[in-house]
Image (tube, rainbow, N blue to C red; front, top):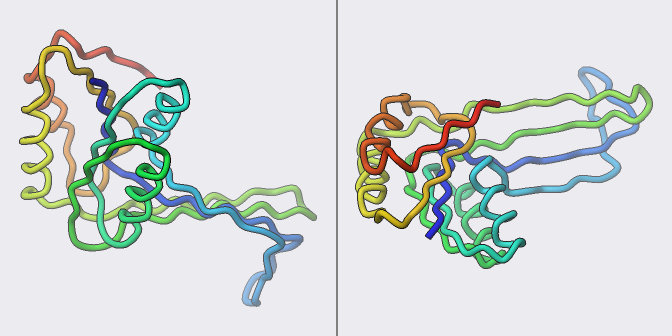
Length: 163
């Protein structure tokens, strides 16, 4: 089985507006809301290509529920470990008259050691025929040592990818 791991999922809000002025209400022409995160995206692409996989990750609040529900609707089994707070919401605003885009990317929730331990316990259940695809940024509270710890599970299957 292929597993994807998203350590800082997000809901991305894309808006389009004719103009953007400071200190005033700016009305939008349209908007789109998308579940996101690098591992979430990998899971969706694999599913569309007919490859079964399971999405794993950490996050918080009703915003994490939105992402998990989206994956379920896409037919992707998923298990996210939930912490206090809210999974981040990013805003991408396209201003038509100036042909400009503003990207507001939030840091994400603080992930506790207890939540990370629960995730680690899940990772230790992966078998020798399983693959783990780790993608994206870290939420607050996640240190690279998680990868060292998780890498000890099945180090021969780690494939480094630079971005």
